Image 1 (cartoon, rainbow, N blue to C red):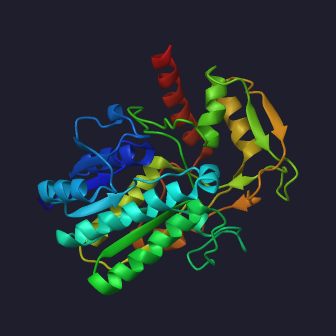
Image 2: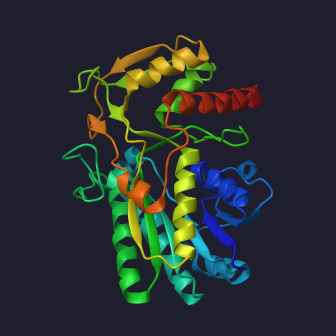
Length: 329
């Protein structure tokens, strides 16, 4: 079927939002997920194949049955700290398993692939905002695993004609504006949901890693992009691939940096909760500022974020957190 799209990691945070966006855009999304970090409840009526994307026989069976027009690959481990402690886990899952998927796609004649990449491929920024030409020098196994896949995709294009779009996220945040799905990592490592868990009473306080950075208020500055806007960029990239465009690489962000203190202040205002915070020592490898230059994506894809405001991002995430907290009692 021409409109079937296989979404690996489709029960996870960004993947589940992508599945909803595909469905609303008239595609037929099919989910492949091992549910190691995703949630069965996030797959809302779609066909779900539970298994490991690194299992060649399983992936072969799924592709033979589903026959997708393209594959969107979100199945990957994402914790930077864990990748430093257990690099093998990250190379097995993020690199080797991706190669298994690509080889299965080749065997079935599927030649369109969208890859969930990361700003971590750039390492310590040499300049900000960061454009696509910025040197790639990842400083942890997580970033290296994603950069390796990007290079592998380039080689698969040259050798086999497999066309790919790699989308490098800066800080994905927010939740479904309809509050049907949201962010539920276990353990949670992202700043916005961690702050909101304090407001909902699920966490006692938030730690701020360093307040002596060379930034306007001393705390780290990051580029938060709404998950629904990320999905819109994927949808635009998918349509171009299906229309026959070539491989491409884009950075995705708001182009606006918000400091940890600004996120805290916004969350306090929106939730009405004081959200106590403790200043902790800096974390190794945390650059002062990471902000995307997304002009290439805007120009080539016609992408314009619909939810660029930090208030909106936090408000949507807060609605999700209140729902999760209520469900857990």
